[in-house]
Amino acid sequence: MSLNAFITKEAVESDEDGPLSGKTVAVKDNISTKGVRTTCGSAMLEEYVPPYDATVVELLKDAGATIVGKANMDEFGMGTTTETSAFGPTKNPVDESRVPGGSSGGSAAAVAAGEADLALGSDTGGSIRCPAAFCGVVGIKPTYGLVSRYGLVAYANSLEQIGPIAPTVEEAAGLLDVIAGPDERDGTTHDEGADSDYAAAATGDVEGLTIGVPTELVEGADEGVEEAFWAALDELEAQGAEYKEVSMPSVEKAVAAYYVIAMSEASSNLARFDGVRYGKSGGYEGNWNDAFARAREDGFGPEVKRRILLGTYALSAGYHDKYYAKAQDARAWVKQDFDAAFEDVDVLASPTMPVPPFKLGESLDDPLQMYLADANTVPVNLANLPAISVPAGETEGLPVGLQLIGKKFDEETIIRAASAVEN
Image (cartoon, rainbow, N blue to C red; front, side):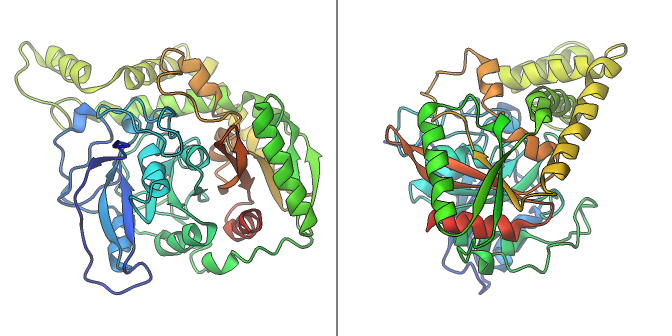
């Protein structure tokens, strides 16, 4: 049975000889690929074929990779299950009655099922780490600015990053080596970390490493998930690391702050899809306002419409200070809590997702449940920090992911710790 991991299966081979020669890569369908359809999982862009490659795609080709297709995703990256795609849901290869996570569910499912050696996803609030955890593979959300976002169709500019998904920590780190570095076409990229050898950091040596466990990110987790999490930490301790509990009270406000900020940025970014500049066009009667409304009504799915409406409301006159400004204050508080925690520890650890993979269809009628499932991942994006999800056991036969969070541009430490979990 097909997993529906791809929206478009179209191979693009490279003539270059490089570190990814012989490797196949699935590219999330919100990353621009020249001459290959890029839909963002939306009917709005069903026929869009970009005239240019994203920077990360150029780097893949330069490294000798073969791109095997465009991976399925939640529409415009808005979802935690890959069920909001206009092209149908992706199934989890571990259990086809379950979701693969989102929004990069197609990328993770393709890697887990062996339909691609490696994959690129994008992570706005956990969209690489969530599907990596649900599918039992490795996913890295890089520090904001380490990887170019040029050619990534924007959802929430201040939060999102492109990152690797792979079967092992070393392979994910090797893919990060290829795509990391500054880009003159993306003013948010940074020189720091560009010369690192991330694959070489996967040594598994955690002797003397201090791991902090934010109690707020463990409390309330599913019992089986929590058991797997603590077992993984005990194993790290046996390998020479030590762990201790820390408190980060701000993370209890992180989900609310994240969704206000992300939806506000989405309402602005998606305004360009008006049937004239981008998106569905033609065949609509009436004046421009009528045509604009019809194009967006026909092109966007329910979850995208919900987030545009909520984001527009949060930014509207009379409500900006009440919602958006307060969300930015909460974001600053989250950053302060991370800074304080990292004064005493080298990395922070939590379950990647507090629950096992949902059943298909389980969360579609309850968006709030889907939003709350991001509680452990969104604080990382608010603080613009790096994080990795690595498989850390199972509960009832379903994968459990361990999330390791690092200091800014300190991907090497979380890769080293994650490789110890893997070993």
